[in-house]
Image (tube, rainbow, N blue to C red; front, top):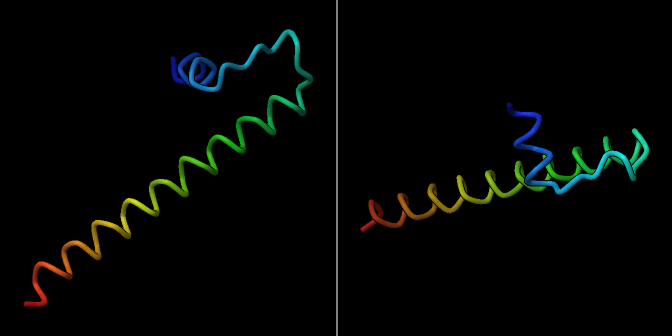
Length: 54
């Protein structure tokens, strides 16, 4: 189920891509999602700090 969800989000047509291209696309997707999560966590931290610094 996760695999098909990932394929839907990435819009990977595996019949038109090599295994290496597919792996690269998945890696890039995971990297982007991870960086977005880090940015969100940093935003939460800064927001909480600003609320309690007064």
